[in-house]
Length: 425
Image 1 (cartoon, helix red, strand yellow):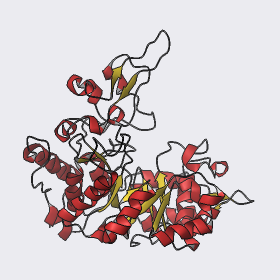
Image 2: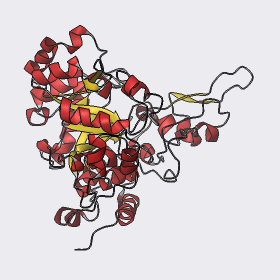
Image 3: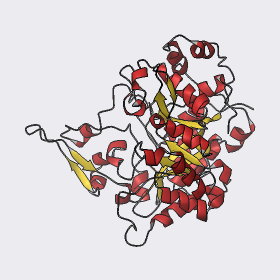
């Protein structure tokens, strides 16, 4: 059977979005093209040059030798490789284009961050209040006017920066679907809306930002099914007061997310629902236990004895939490020889029987200066981009994470295949 090309699949998906969406913006019985073909035929994983470029930049040693010797033919899709917002290192996040790119790079699981619109429809967006930096909303006068804070230009005389805040809950699903996704960035000294939506970091690119098709959560489910990937929906913490408009509670929101998988006929073992709120995770554990078994607690608490102790980890396990996902720096430390090793936090989580997922590689830009926030506990051992492979290796082999979020999934796909982890689930 002839394989679909990346361009062919993307064109088909975009055409279907354009032709089958209802006047209200929500697709009716939206069925992505080629579902049977994707399920029945092997897929070609397209790594591109970046993984081997990173390997070439590594310090000499056994890990570099092994990765250099890796046969990159016949790469397999792997659940170890999780597409963080798709592939936003170069594609507008949470768009069809970004998701297809992640799947093409071998991500076995792809993330849709979930927020809700004014008419209480679920959509894929990293935060409820990021439309002003991730879409073109401020350049659309009738929608900019509906924003919590419509665009206000910067004042070059006083140095006062531009202001805007646009929330998914400010607009309807139909209005949301009319927007175009872009790279997450803005120009703080912009004097016009057109200037404000610029500002992409110089280590990213706008090369693939000429189009960015936004999706509802339901549409992401159908797209991911077509791509043959699994699901990592993150229930975003609302910035509006809950219950929203007096009667849409946090539990309604959490239950709605699971219901959309049930209605789509998705098996619970293919879904990893996530939240930074422990209450959401426990709701899924207690009220939708088949989905709650793989619910992921995204732990953003600071490192402290009470939040990294074995007793704390055991208490999470006793409550029904099975998977813990902290920022990668929380799971890493340096030994006396400045070698990267598992942290006490990671060792205690493992001892308590918790599985772990790390976030996020390929999000920090060039690592020559230590890697910034994501590498803060090991920055003294980070001085080149190849060190990312060392970090991934420690997370995989020493910490024992079951998956790693990446802004460019080809990197984690390459590592997993080279190190025999491609079939890890």
